[in-house]
Image 1 (tube, helix red, strand yellow):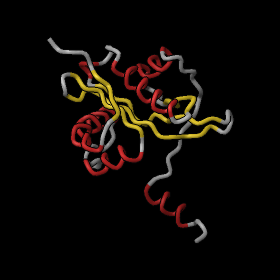
Image 2 (image 1 turned 30 degrees about the vertical axis):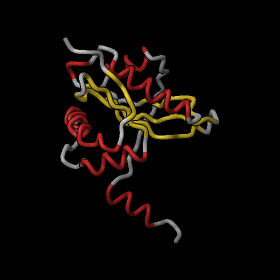
Image 3 (image 1 turned 45 degrees about the vertical axis):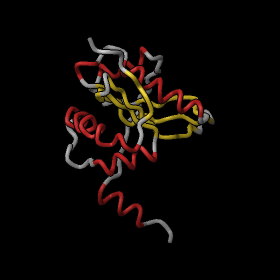
Image 4 (image 1 turned 120 degrees about the vertical axis):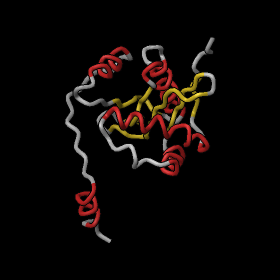
Length: 158
């Protein structure tokens, strides 16, 4: 009989265990799977807040949080970049436990909110965030990437 899932802060040595989970999320979202590497994940773990869920020692989910500051409310928070739970463990409280871990970590560092986003067609995520008490806002996100990012960065004064 399996035990209960355990959620903890990820350590740099967890990059290999996270890799298949990140690739699975990318695959589900239609994003490239082959760009993410163990080294990149080790860097993420060192630079951000990463929570890892395990069941009997096997990784079953993760979430990433990045420090942010909301000037409109003059408060620190965490932007949740990724939240992923393997399909067979969904709807068992793992996602909530991952976000609770990040909320507690953020709170210890002065955060007062989580900023949660989901793609427009991801209605399951929308419903989940509402169950957490999340208030929906109509936001259109933009990403400046590749050559456009390089061009913009080059415009900065030396």
